[in-house]
Image (cartoon, rainbow, N blue to C red; front, top):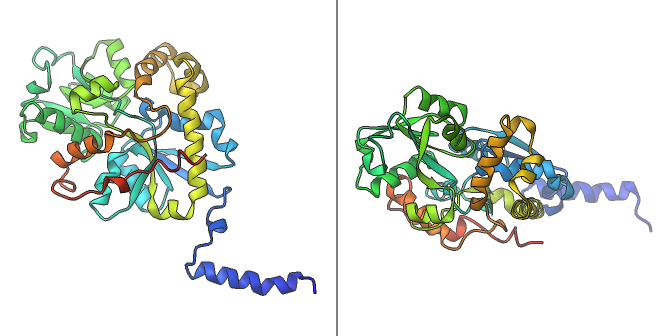
Length: 339
């Protein structure tokens, strides 16, 4: 006897009860049309350029994904949004996955955008005569995006390499972009850690100079002793467990963007970005050129990267210091390799 709608209703009802009871319903959970909200830790920063570029290139839509990008200036705040379930993913620094594991939170990076931090310690031109390296930071005020942020741990590590304890200087949270520039101009900080295009903007006006450059692999290895994967897409394990197809589609979209970056000039990449990101187009292109070496070509985790990041965090992050961390649980290359 052929099935009728009436005959199917009890089956559908039973299936819904199973889902409600917590039994995984892969198809329902992995609906590609379901909106994915991704919080970016400062969407105009060039370290996070792949997020908006992927949207502009139409790669999310090509994968059949409904993605919304939001911006939150500090990565630590974006992390909180993820844990609260307000967003499904964060484009931020990989080091958050290590920190969170020590707090009992299972989060992993599934795409790596930057094999290096892309961060630069800039010294105010007013302080440059007395602050020639991180060995000179005693008694100085150093700007970071936020206390407990990736920039604060990197700052402390760079100073420690010269035997300077964190008690010998002050760290002031000044955010990024315009607020960082204002802090330099107003003399509220002697030096600080920031990214492009802020670096190039400060160089252009002559308000600050480069003290430590971590935009390239060589510069990062000299400063930190290895590659330092930073900008990445990280998600909660609980989300990716029930959204494996969506995770693979997201990863594939981002990998296409990384390949686009590696096969196009800074001018061609800039042409794809929104006009309001590049109020000074020549400056933006120049900043992008300086940033290109930091991007991965395939979205995969550099082999030596996780250990370098753990070394830095274990030095100054009280949540990580002395704790066991299973680095294999903090990232996965499976999703970028899925297609």
